[in-house]
Image 1: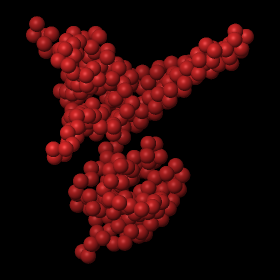
Image 2: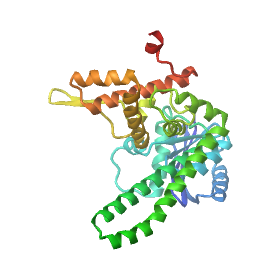
Image 3: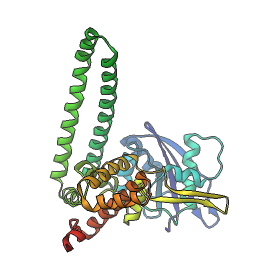
Image 4: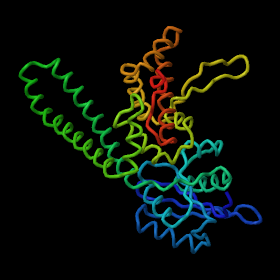
Length: 338
């Protein structure tokens, strides 16, 4: 990547710490830093400051920030609109690349991100523009997940209290908790209706969603999560890459003759997507003969149940990517040949 100006951004809820370095004939300049408000007005001030500091907002400049969930969205959207390359890096990737570092604060972090960008310029991949309806769908799915977590916690506490309380007090707690439980259930139902409406109203999302539902075991919510996680499949270039992101690819753990660990999946993954794929795998072995036969055969060979389920999750992900790449519904070739 042929860039001259490298801008590192440390994003927090209320502030944006901006630092930049410039590559010249003598190497890299000393980092320059300033803090701004994380708002529309703050971003306009950033634009003016960078121009004043001889950092043009063009193809010679690249912005690098860590993924902070929702707090980096405003910055991302604003500079993408200006046509400037923006890279959203994994925070662990940035941290590990810096080696041993003592102490941290927002000012130091922004400088480190700017230096990381300059040193790894040939490896940086500018982020693709996030599709607006995908963001809406992603937020709806996040709300649904949070409400389900709260509902389960409330129901568990309520049921345990009912089990050990006397009848009089049980009636009181039923009356108190009942409204909250019904309210959450009603909200979840409304969110799910809005998710379906969002998918239905967007042709791109609707088409991908329809393709994914043809894959055995993949349901409505899982398909929506995959579409959001991949930004309409623009953020993954292969099925293996997607499987790795979902945390279903086993990696070796060995060194020399003394360390001979088993192949294991890495803990760094999209945990929610991995959980949903686990449920899809369970559904696949119950309702689809292809996966049921595979599961039973591997169990007889002595494979651990969780290892076999992980293999099925991997198969599902590869099929998901295949139907999107080929732009065709899934067809069970074994069944079709029979």
